[in-house]
Image 1 (cartoon, helix red, strand yellow):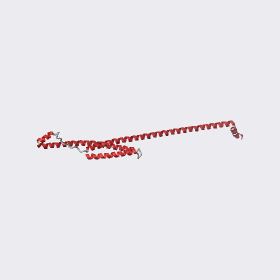
Image 2 (cartoon, helix red, strand yellow):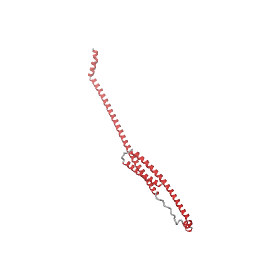
Image 3 (tube, one colour):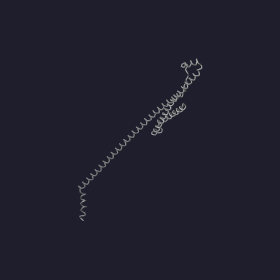
Image 4 (cartoon, one colour):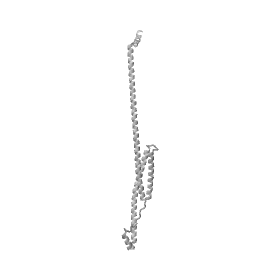
Length: 217
């Protein structure tokens, strides 16, 4: 009975001992300090991680803004480029229009110059029998000149037909570029609408020149 109660008695004496209590409290305080330090370390780690994430977000935001700014500048440059292309196309079409207008003017008929045809005049006066031959010669000269004029006119027409076709193809290419650009901008973008109106006007000029060509052919 004494043996069984001895451990309990000794344990009670140890708990009641000031030395044991001091050691126990010291271990408890030490353990508390370790826990506090771990918590502080965790807090610092979380704070550092949070700052790192915020920095990443800020950098990403800056990159997005830079990207948007770059895209806007590219779109602006593209609008300027398309405007220049349409301006050049308009100049070419005006050139074609002016050329076709000049070609549509009636050719001047060749009128025999009495001063330059002295030999024929002399022959006609001296020998009236040769007047028919002289007249035939004059008519042949007129026909020959007309044929040369027609050939030259056809050559000019071929030149302007080629230029009109080339300009028309350039206009179609610019129109496709505008359509591609339109997808990247708001539907009611004023710059795009202005370009589309300009294209429409130039298409009408192309059609007018085609009709004029058909009249001349």
